Length: 495
Image 1: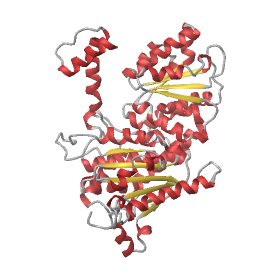
Image 2: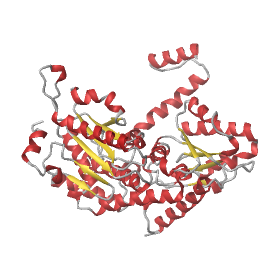
Image 3: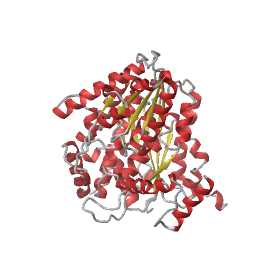
Image 4: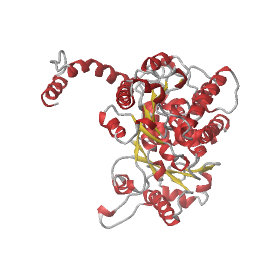
């Protein structure tokens, strides 16, 4: 790139203070990027983001292709402002009260034993968000253990069933439509297993559902009092704040879940009220636009230097790439580029795997480092070495290294952003996740795409249903390409 980061720091001793933002939750350091101010977007681009932001909070039908609003911010409001909020508060109280019973192990199973294990059966948005936060908020858990089953590979559910006790287990079937193939197959298998263990009459005591389709959940055998709904304006990957977070409530309790919502509402208020040129989600989106749209970078690497954030990357991959991986804009016109690839792993493990590529490879990458200044464990020696590694990696990317040996030469001048969380708490995690959500909206506005549909997921589902009879009945596939037909025939011979 034209600008050299080392020279930028040498020419401006105040560069760090000028290019950082700080709030109650974190410090965001943008100074190791090829920028000279946080005003990264032009007037037209800022206006597009402002329109998107106002339409979002105004409840407009910004999900154009499905003709619905995207109002997940309402799920974390702390005050009732209208009838929709009242509905949200009513359902929230219901699933929080239910989950709190499991958290305190005051819920009884069919045989009278207290529920102490929960299995969340879902996929995508019904799995990744709660699973990430269950792991991140380990220090806030009670005694109830939660398992997450998403993959239709029977091994995933089998491994869980071998570890749990039917008498003390609650299954939560989490499917917006109650028709998701992977979720329903896992739920049916779990139901059969439970009946084998405890008998036909146990299901109403050991199953709950999160769905908008109450009748299908009732037909499955779930008592209506244990079916918790949400709304069509809640997209799956934005739904952990709703009853989709029920499994998380069972683990951390209603009080801590409310704190999670409070942190997310702080992010909502900041995004809505902060001046757009000093707005954190806007700046994060502006950084991405600077590299990926203007300078041809290929992907975003996220390296979280915290064991508690080990599942952050899988969660962000769905949030970002399912939202903004689109080929046409809101008017149906092809887009030049969208859908930045996000990948990564926790530091310091990542340093011993793919960091070689980051430092000396030919790919144009932007790295987002995430650290935590205060950890709950007592080993300060570990903490200082962990953060020393984080700071060293971002510095190494920037300064590089000269050597007479080409293989030992680091070009440097490679950009990164560092986010330093003060601590991992329900409030800080709520703030972080909601900030990433708003960042996605800002980037979608810059791409002029709809971040709230996901039709790219549907074709594979449709073709799966078309192929299933050939595989189930071992029949000869008809009217298929030779590759697919050959694979099915090989399976018939060797399955």
